[in-house]
Length: 73
Image 1 (tube, helix red, strand yellow):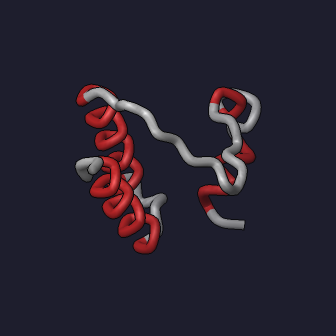
Image 2 (spheres, rainbow, N blue to C red):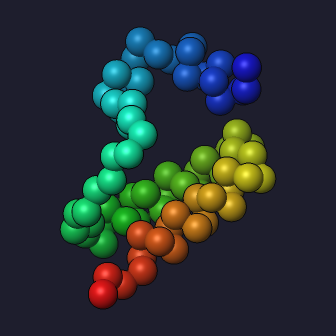
């Protein structure tokens, strides 16, 4: 079990129910405001700086942020 998984298990009765599990095949097309993106950016940075994110996760988070900021055609 990863360290992240053990944290999730430890806090599973407190905050976890507020974050629903995302099933395969789910996609969203929404308009995120600048303040929403800034919040996600801060969360990504905090997660990476906490030492809990693997090198692989850090790279995926950077790519996700770039994808979210890409202009829609």
